[in-house]
Image 1: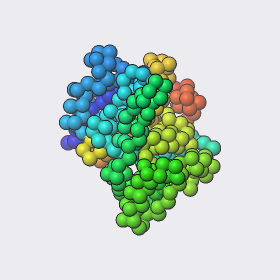
Image 2: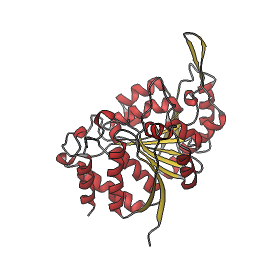
Image 3: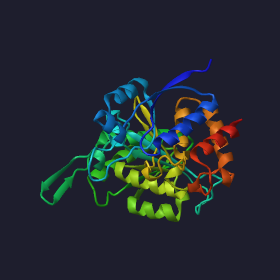
Image 4: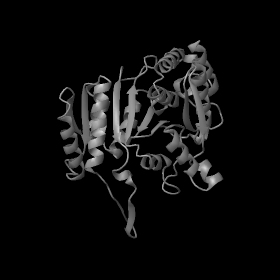
Length: 335
């Protein structure tokens, strides 16, 4: 009998419930047995429970260990702190993994792209330590620690070994931030020395941004602090078609959270226009994490078959398919 996995599900805000429903339909059709524990977070939880991050959600993730999360709206310049950031801190999800692969049926100006972004996920300016010094002057504190830098570097090099990657490039701004980014580089250099089979290079972040849009295939894996990683990973998604095709995984010692990294798109919520591909690709990362390799491969092959037919794509990719029709097309392609 197939193993039944326990997974916490956070449908999210805006288009979240639509794309989550589509992904669950596809996973169900693959034959993988998952008992979903659904919980709210973000704006919906704020309205119904008075907090964007209910205790019952935290308890469920702590007990189960794995979560699939749809997009959650983060208020800009006001309101509650990012739920994504809070979850990463609470469960020590220190490694943000963002594979960036071009899909052969969706041509882009850059041709074949195969990059992996590894982003430190718990500190840097995203520590959220801010205060007003005097009226009109605000200070944000950048936290960089040897512990966090060392373990994210070890994660990146271990991933490279396990997945046949050849090169890790540490991205920094140590020419200006000599202490904080200097510490990051020193830790990366120390860890790199333990992996002689992996080529190690370094690049200043602004040059990296330019190089990514000029010669992206020079890179294999990018290793970054939190803020740089957030920005550069979205840039990399743009190389292969945008955030609608970009999955993300947040990994820690005991917990794993898989998500679509795009926003909640409230302007199209409920219209059946959303593309579930990013969340589906995140779910495939989750299935592989659960060692459901055969099912993950079947779903991915079916996804490629559907995307190869323009009329079956969602509107953002030039097609006319609704969210649910796209999901049913992937299901049919698995049969």
